[in-house]
Length: 469
Image 1 (tube, one colour):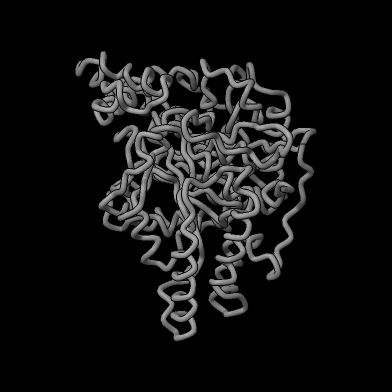
Image 2 (cartoon, rainbow, N blue to C red):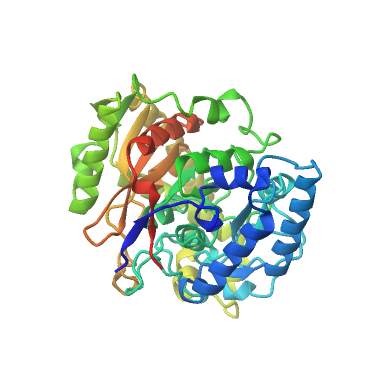
């Protein structure tokens, strides 16, 4: 298993710089965008044969874009503070003229005629797309396993192939391994937060509506949302701001910008401790890190309080699955019903469950989802956030995954109940595998989640650890 190191950022290794620093280095001319892009491309060439984070790398195009960025910056025509900074995109995000596989062999040669809104926004602000990262097939499950196109290798254990978390598996591996400074994932039941947790990163599941899903291949039109995957809360907040769409519902307004309140600390905030019953079945190392995190936040001035929740987290699963299966089957029906399509049997069988969901069952599930969201909002009315672990265990070996279970016990309820949540590193096992804390907030309270997470990272160094490749 890997020994880790604490991140040491130098201009000699621009791939190791936090994006908040990297952007300043490029803008000032102390390092060029070409040098930065070349550093990441060299890392990809050296390590991605094993790690399998990328579906496709745009080497020539990224270098051309970097050269153009350097010339624009030198001429005083930078389009924004992140002009020339590279990024990786999950392979559900459409780029005109590019192949978008959605993690399926069936789409290996599918070229799209559109560019996703979120990709347009990033490129308009000068970001350079390094390539597309692997996803679970059709973004359907959370372990990060892809039978047809291969499972990315969690970089925290060089000897054993461990799960990266999914469905944004490649995005998590790319950022953790220094093959991208940050990346975009999507989250329907935990698909940004799970790879962030298993790969030692910070990841945000925003409120639905904060960021446009136009041009992103859907799993559930109701529950899907893109989110940032980054090394730190600050970088995640910066990327979230770049992703927000002023023309999309919920994307604007003073409360949607986390930066003005990021450094206000946690003194005076009331943070909820999850109920004792939710600790059952959780790995001892995960619970130890969780309890230590609560003590840290208390020492920083937050008030940690017990909360009585109206139901168990798992009680949201049936409602969530009804909505997801009905909507996924509606979108992928022709693929599912055509035996000639190259789909893995597990994904075909899973999504086909939507075939037998009636309109009445679907509408009842949506109604129940609203009632559960209201009940949870009432229960959390006196707290600013609910704190949970992000996962029940650290990353397990791929060959020991119990596919009859889901890793999303602590994440899926957030999507079901229209909340937002931030996952961030809060510890490590004795063997060095990352552990993660989840900060769950009411819908549209991303700024509060970022504020709590930023203060936690000022007092800890877990987010500075990187795997030795």
